[in-house]
Length: 109
Image (cartoon, rainbow, N blue to C red; front, side, top):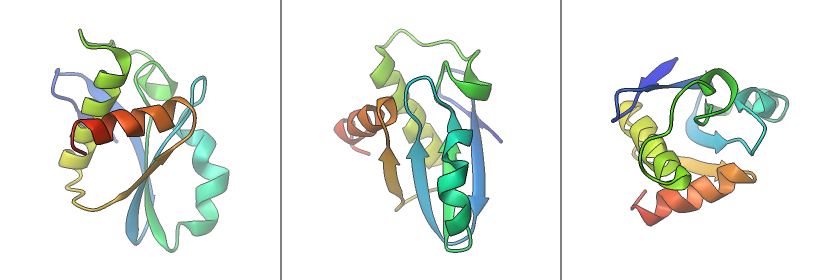
């Protein structure tokens, strides 16, 4: 699915499974599909939300705004949470995705 972002762009996000929501952010040089071998065995128990960060995967063409990269990623994550109405979801990441999680927490996520 494509999630609308506050700057008018759209972010590609994969959603699969049922149950409690879990948002996972991929690392540098990766994309959301790289999570699939890890999440598919648990898709009966959790709803996985797997965004492709700007510059990667199907979101490789999405330009960056005027903010620094991680501020942009944090705002994008906030937009995903808002669009999908995720009030309480687990959030995790690896590499760049982990740092994006920290940036999201800094802005109050």
